[in-house]
Length: 571
Image (cartoon, rainbow, N blue to C red; front, side):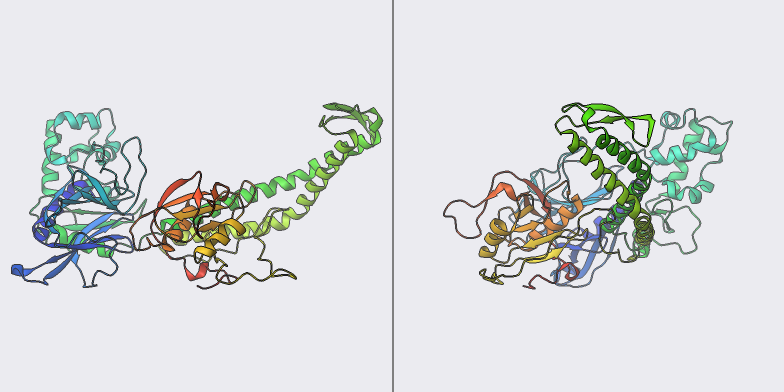
């Protein structure tokens, strides 16, 4: 949402919301709705309003009527009798605040940030963050955003207000630019000139802006100021709502533009545009789909290398035969040797050797390598065909998600490289002399959206069994920090197979759900490798001590039914 548009909307929201009781923050598909009770003449219950904040592109906000849901699905509920005392837009920035007070409590403030990726932050004014929609680490421009941390104000904006544009500022923006680049330069620096709406806005701008012979002067600056004041008049009663999808999703409001159905107020236009925006793209699903495309592209490239390796296989086998044929000439401990080709004595090979191996062991190693290259080249054409088919399906899934559709289902995970490993082995049944494990000790078993197997303990004894008997040292172990809950193990095993940040966040959400903190907004989760987890001596069941770990923040999320494995218990 454009800063100058937001500055026109917030005063109307302040008039509507000041004095209203704040019920809480309710999640929506694209963001959150702050719900308020507006009582007529002090009576309760009164009109219920929702200030909707869309945190998916295009980021947007509007005031709407809210239905009565009883607050059962609120992500955050303020103290009882919390009342709104005011609202303010950030100066020339894409954000605003709502101030609130509750009897006997310090003042509260809701920060709504509509710059990507968007955030809603509840602050105990001047002290600490109470709740936030998206936990973010500190950056070079801003401190960390997390519960109990102080609220870090955003860095100052460099956007210019076109309603007060002076000659010097205009000259600094347009200096040395040809006429066809001036509009884009203004869009980058001035509020109210989004690049996506340039085609609509350009005809109404001063003609001198596009005159190659004109240099920026005070007359041009005055013309732009006049245009901006007409286009964003606070009292305008004919507001146009614009929305577009290319080159990226966007929307805008303006009072001076061709419009077949103008709106009578800024908020009415914002509400109309907001209701008409397409369903948000599932960012997590899109990232997973794009990651699969990149992985399959790498697989196809590697398989092409395997085919190219067929020529190398013949050369490696010829070198191995030369070593066997002239083995007595090879000195033990040598790093290389030059030998004739048994098939063509006029040709010689410079053969690299491992000094730690004996001559015949070097020959065996070359024969083994040649065999692997030959087998890979033999299987490569079939695997390339399968990989290219999966790549086409993965690209189609990306395109579907970008259109807001669910997209075709991803094919089952399988290894496309020769010699690749398969899925984790199934549990071994109880054998002769080995009693079956009670079902209460067996963990719940799930598979993440990227194919990783996850085991979750059911009770204290089950946690002990999972962590200290079933989990391998290299598995990733999780547990909610500061609350009782299930031990969670992400089966990783040996080798350089690391789960992505998306998978870790997904599993951390499951760990938060299977804990006493499942009803909290954001939960700290301890993450480590199982080898750093031990059981203190004589400790009760379920107690574990972590020697080294990191903490991630996750929102409690119940694993979907589709993630449950058939060999796991449904409890």
